[in-house]
Amino acid sequence: MAHNIADNATSTTNDVTRTLARYIVNAKPGDLPAPVRDHAVRTFLNWLGCAVGSCQHEAVDIAIKTLTPFAGAAQASILGRSERSDIFTAALVNGISSHVFDFDDTHLKTVIHPAGPVASAIFALAEYRPVSGAEFVHALALGVEAECRIGNAVYPDHYDRGWHITGSAGVFGAAAAVGKLLGLDEEKMVWALGIAASQPVGLREQFGTMTKSFHPGRAAQNGMTAAFLAAQGFTSSEQGIEAKRGWANVTSTKQDYTEITEGLGERHESLLNSYKPFACGIVIHPAIDGCIQLRNEHKLTAEKIARIDLKVHPLVLELTGKRTPKLGLEGKFSVFHSAAVAIIDGRAGENQYSDAAVVDPKTVKLRDSIDAVVDHSIAADSVHITVTLTDGAKLEKFIEHAIGSKDRPMNNEHLAVKFTDLVEPILGVARTAELLKACWDVQSAPNLAQVAALSRPAR
Image (cartoon, rainbow, N blue to C red):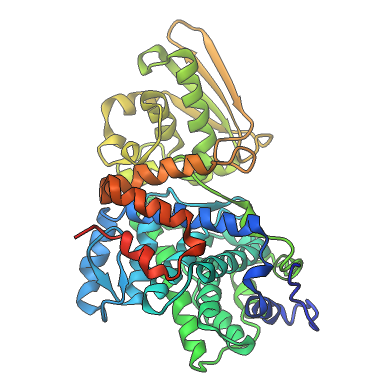
């Protein structure tokens, strides 16, 4: 039976933080429906594959080189690498690694990337103190629920103001999940959420740079800090989210607290989490999907194309309107580059977003022939594409729902292929297969440290 956590509490604007805290504290693993647990497993697998797969990115190298001289005892893994660090540094670095490819999960209502802040924090914690797979999956689901509900309460205004909601709301998810594993009582969970409220991180100005991936990493670290401080009696406001000068009112002009408090234990935001088939901003995925389909259906090559016209949702040009990216990270926020590589390569994986790929002359030539205009009738997961060939013929494609969206989700087989493609170059064939199986079986793992050990190179 679903655990309704409102027990003896009303969901007024004065007890939002406490109502959420009470739910997290009282929630039991058996309360989660099987589909929610299964989705949490998929979320974990996708997060781990992204974190291991990008572990050799320059941003990760710089972070490790910079922080190692100041790090504490070797308590947790740096995923995909031989280095270990204290749990706070590991949470930060693994959060960076999980997001730097922009290949991670997305809560479609808010464009939060939920796993980065939450999983990066609790996976590090699970190497410091014993955590079973069942406990881990439960904490992950609760953390994702907390951050997405809080995100719902202020979206889209909060995002429109320039906050990168993955970092600014993700800190609550990390605090909730770590606090759950630490066994915080209701009062201390209120404090943990309050301390988290004082640590929002992330500006959309940073999209296309290494700092974007810093946001989920710091959110993981900040949320963990909040939970550990609260566990020792470090106090905070008991209305950190909803107070007049609390998080929601300071960071947004829109607050819908029913999104946080109503249906706790009954409506599960985590079921709206999705997984990316392409290594770039999710709003570009319809254009990539459509261009790949046109390429394959008509055997298109760049030389046959005179121009490509895209009708897109308003967010596409707002978020990914970089016309002439010079670096791979910028290419992830260019609908023009992404459509071009979709035609030329028939895919949009990490190789299509290298520094070399965005300045490749063939790609640049096709990119320069692509135009995009906003059409307010186009949904966020849709696109209308018109390809004009050099002989004057026109090809059209309307994508109603892109692959990876709620209506065309990636299935377990798709996720396994994605995981393998990301992890095999880092860990090799045999270890990747072993780690993949451990991820699918995570709910029965007696100790998550065993899974963490498989995420490092074999000696």
